[in-house]
Length: 108
Image (cartoon, rainbow, N blue to C red; front, side):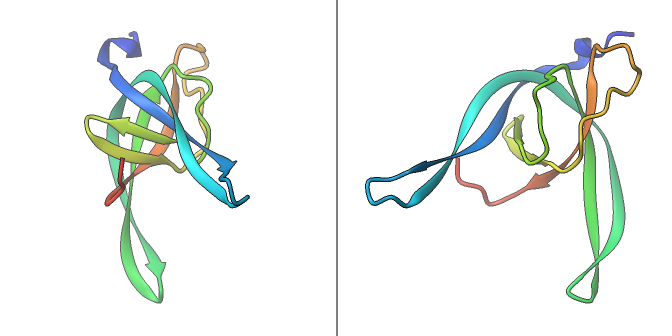
């Protein structure tokens, strides 16, 4: 079964830094069009500041072999951060699975 029939257009964002006129670093993102889709979500309890907190991660599937940890994915108007290393899950080299988490309050 081909994974790409489920893919939608989305954007991979990779952080880059340049220096402004005063020599201070400025962060921005380089956008690259890719295709992929969000799969199943998993929730787990983690301790943050001594309090139990729900951490949600979602499987993201793509054929973009250039994707890296800490890249961002803009998918159907939402922004997700890559929080896992890409995995060639079925070893056929036609797609990879990456764990992402949704991030909010990000200015585009």
